Image 1 (cartoon, rainbow, N blue to C red):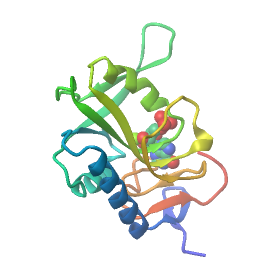
Image 2: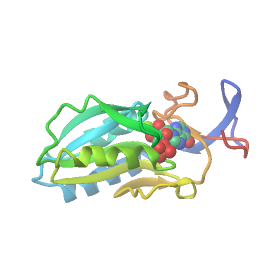
Image 3: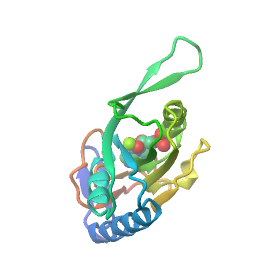
Amino acid sequence: MPEPIQIQDQLFTPFISSLQIAERVKELAITISQDYAGKKPLFIAILNGAFIFAADLFRNLSIEAEISFIKLASYQGTVSSGSVVTAIGLEDAVSGRHIILIEDIIDTGKTLHEFLPLLQRQQPDSIKIVTLLHKPAALQHPVQADYSGFEIPNKFVVGYGMDYNGLGRNHPEILQLQSDTHL
Ligand code: IMP
Ligand code: MG
């Protein structure tokens, strides 16, 4: 058994190594480069979690491409529909572009489910999603990644940009919560 790593009050165990991540990210970049040759796509990375994945994916692309970073903020709408999402930093012209959203992880799918209509309103030519991880067992909204690095079980993970209470983003590998209880 590998040594557990403590982050705040929780213990995490190594789950996906840096080497496994690097190899998979390279494969994703090769596939996307083939699919988007000559299309000059605009990547939009969703902060904070996707920043390391976005950097590694982007530097492995072999095609002309642009990248931009946004942060999604939820606020309570005046209507009873619950939270409404707003994108901070979505300044680059999206209209007529081929957009590839970069996510660290699709969990319930809520974030993308709320953000996609907002993006669609700006009339891009196409929208695709690349996520490093997805948890099919946690999915609650009709959101599907077009490119996915790893399918993982419904357990909390940290590292490689992803956090537990703001910490753990700097771990080069991906760690998984040791206990079976979900946060
Ligand atoms: P969703 O809206 O439920 O799909 O969750 C999306 C966001 O929640 C991700 O982009 C992450 O920032 C965060 N998240 C979901 N699951 C995890 C996890 O296991 N570890 C760290 N962050 C997570
Ligand atoms: Mg995120």
